Image (cartoon, rainbow, N blue to C red; front, side):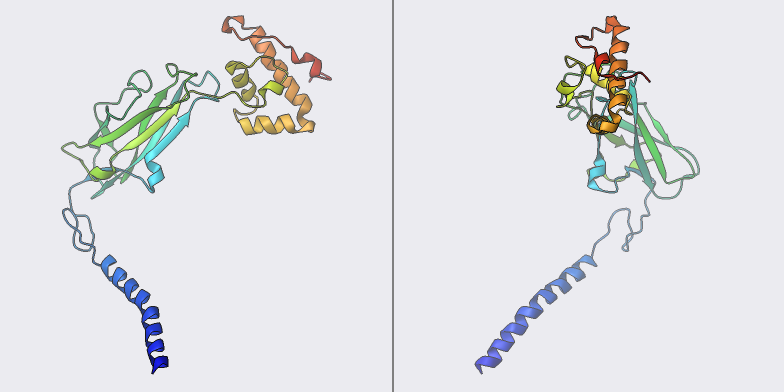
Length: 255
């Protein structure tokens, strides 16, 4: 009898999780679609626009001008859009605004002012919103990034599809920290412009620069690059970059 009770309890323990999974599966199949959707999930409402976020991480775009050459003054952020409903046979108007409560970036200062209205292209269900970030007024000494929070707004041609997922966040800065290895370079006192100029010879890629620094086979090229940095700022004293060390002595021969 005890053995029979034990077997019964064991069977219950094994079957209980399976029963729970069955209930969960049943509940998942009982999603209720309301509003502009049919009971089986088909959208039947008027055309509606939304930010095309494939995953949660897509709601945030981060960008830094920091390591790029000073000549790079503008960066264009491409934000994917999509509409629900029929493929439009003509351009459809929609609006975009910056959330003043959550944005720290200023229009016309840190980014190009948004247009009063935009046109979603005809013949497609996807399009791209383009926002230009402006570098010149972004401090190179401030590490904290600026923040621009965009929201879609409806028109008489397009409504907003998902109010709860109606934000695109862009964070951007112009900051670059002094690299730990700069003190070992034949360039003397650190200056941000020295570092940026040196990076130009390595596709503005700090990793490529560091690899060249450690690679003995790259030594001559590396020191020639440092000499080019020195010569550039020697020819442009108006930039105020200190030249307290000439790397010429490290170059065994000229290219």
